[in-house]
Image (cartoon, rainbow, N blue to C red; front, side, top):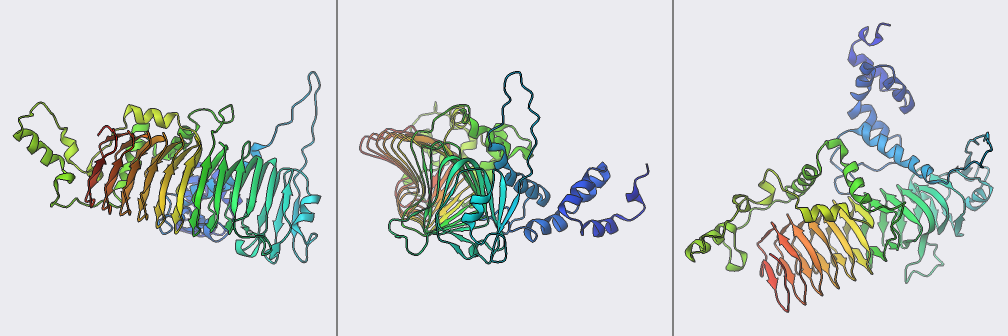
Length: 509
């Protein structure tokens, strides 16, 4: 059969296809490779329009880079759409009895509508009338739902219109899986505001929360519950994860409040639902479109982050800010010719062609567990991420500024900090206390009130390929039996020492 696309110019076909819906465009992709390429050529026009104007979705690079377009609007649309269906895969599968064939009839999920002129005027009544895996749509005329809601079967709640107009007071999840989208979770006025009340509680199952706002309250997740929060804004609100391992937070904004934005505590249990190294697989899958090996992927991500805020070191430096070239001269004058300085050490990290991933760091990445925090923005808070009581976390690609402290890891906890920007904190950017540890790699830490990295109380982290500069005090402080390994970092232009070791500090530099 002759391809019909040859009868008309491609420009005219693009005009015709620009009026089609998402389903029709997907059908066109299945006709032939030529049609698929034609639909793919609408990436910056039709697919961008479908993503930004036909759905209440935030920008793909929100909140850190809202003005930077993604590599592909079509792929961004696909990822958001598939993520909105991911909650359906968490339900329990129906098992057949031994020796019995069951011809099950699949029930089509219903759509229930809540509004003034709808069948249900209250969301509580719609939840009571719904069945498993139904969808409830809330009209934007509904202002506020005062009574607390308890969801005991798989359900999807979606707000229509602006999420600020649809306010829900409190929700508790007690089901295998659920999804809440495009709503505002805010406590009612009669509830006490100090301490902040719980507006969303997950005690079992997995919750998918996207494109919503949480104000003046906190989200509490306890084991065996899990949560996936994406493209949400937190205003004077926080997330508390207690002994929960199936948790992921990405593309969220945290602002205002006298408390930590994310609190992670407790030992996460490992099992078939949370195998060792699952975060490493998720990390490689997130960047799978780059087609790079693990070492190349690490080098690409770290260099991309370091080049954003690269600053050339000042020529005038004191003895506590020695450059490698000065170290070479001092070693030659002292007759210590046996010490060999690698030539790449005199080149700043941001200007190198590659950054090798050491074996110890690679092992830490592969064996990581805990909660994932990726591409989030923290500002005007007391703290960003607080990990304690043997908790563990993976923090990647986040921007932390204008907070009292950046990352606080204590009580035998483990954290992986990869390619973050931590600056303008009132105290130190990264704290390690009470036998804490982890990997700090590829971060840009600058203009903090105290030390860029503070290591104390027998903590033993691994620091490599970080830029620590313009600190109001020292770059790295190690004291009180603190250890740690500092390898291949750029530490310069700090007001005090680059690495300050005192009070039984014993790091490897």
